[in-house]
Length: 324
Picture 1 (cartoon, rainbow, N blue to C red):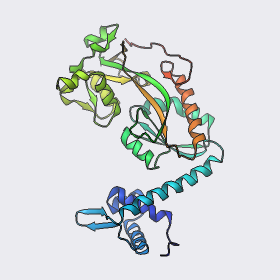
Picture 2: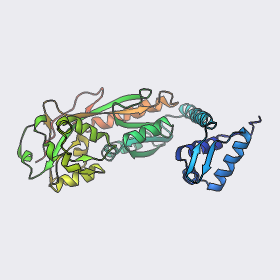
Picture 3: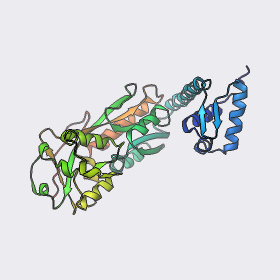
Picture 4: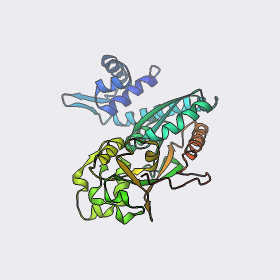
């Protein structure tokens, strides 16, 4: 078998079709036409002497013979990416593209603190940002599509390395005319479970809010009649319009100042709810120096926020809440 014509691009096409199980979507994801992708895969199958994909009216399937070859293609692509990473690691630190994923409940509030000092310190860095939910971001990190992810810990994959960044309180947000808006000290037991609004499935903040209110799960009551929000700002809008209450990350309260005349914020005392954020990466990532430098930059930027418990930094936490 002559594999001289085998190239990385064709293996990337294989992985794309295996991921999407659709030739059109795979071609679109790789910025090529479908006929081009299909023709290259047919040539590859002829070279290997194996049918990788079963093409039928119901869609595309990976064949039994093709499955181990697809798995090996993923390994080869990962190693080829590592070759590029190692070459970049030898160059000037934090230069060129760096693909960073950030969970949606953090990105809009962290990035205003980060981007200006990052541009000043590392002007040659091309930060490519992806915002989303934890599981898809971690999946993209595992697949080599992202270089690092900032997310709430713990993460499901123990093979990944999580470098702690900071802890932030989950702050009770209620409408201005809610009884708790006039209470100076709110305890965990005071959380209005019957009024709780949650983010939609897939957001780690949803699970963290429910973990603070286990009685909502034990007694079988639907949380706010199943009322949900797709984003943190939609959730804040719902609270501001009197549709319920929720727990918001403290950085979102500090940076997101919209609706201050409609939403009141209260720290929860006692065993206060919080979440822990970390910079997560693959241990095999070739640019470990860049990961460490990025973490230092993040820690410096976060320390300026003042009310967060930043990892390995002198405590500057102060009670900046409640507002109004």
